Length: 350
Image 1: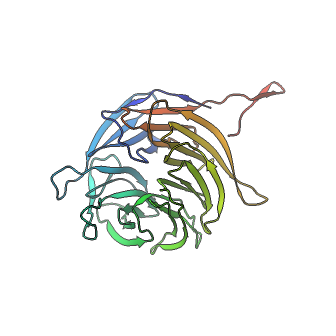
Image 2: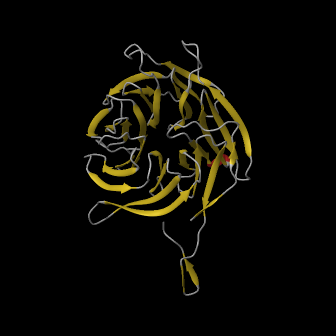
Image 3: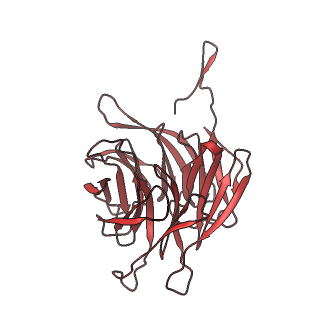
């Protein structure tokens, strides 16, 4: 069970973009960073458990050719083995900052040469894999940047061609040194999923066909792809083979965000139907199939939810943003005894 905590006020509101919330937890400093996009700017907030924002910063998209300021499409913290970078994508290009947004270390302008005059040019979908940062584009290509341990000498090392429509989201997980392991998945507007093995050269392992609706958000957990679709469904696939394990009619409207708490296998889904659901994923030891248990449902009344993230790896708290909502809503778990055994409470496992 979760309860509503004190909200975090925003200077502006959240734009109606899928995955419009990024969270970075810094346990050593007991701080949590939040990033939200609104039009041509992104707002960064640092938050402490005491309940008050400690700092706020606004970042703006770098202006290229054109008369109007470029719109930001996503902001996301990428945790690499040796540093953390904040990546901002827009209709002009890709910007990378130090984790607090104070210094821009890299700028990549998008090449619109192949785009038709009526086609929107943008980057969207951000994830870190090893010492690489991968960013999706409007053309369906995924740009792979090689990140040094320090400094601005970032190099575009590869372009992945697996999609024909704009990338919507990218998810990764650590391969833990295993060969031929699927550790990255990319999704696009057609609902197609491409599963990759990362490395000095990325390799396409399998394609999971779409079925006529976009896939705005994906996650990857222990070799399982969790995909959220525009029809409100969540589907779980085996990453290496594309086999469908589970199909959940999770929401009444389009899903806008998925997130995972990797330590406990909790999956968060948020959609335009004002609901946020939390699911518990587990693998059956006998059949090696995926089992799903519904843990919690939270309604955010009169709000078009556009972003939702867990705030810690154990999934004990989460945050939500909504279109035209000038605050970040926070929720934290409450342990309630479900029954008494010999005078001692027994706690829910989900």
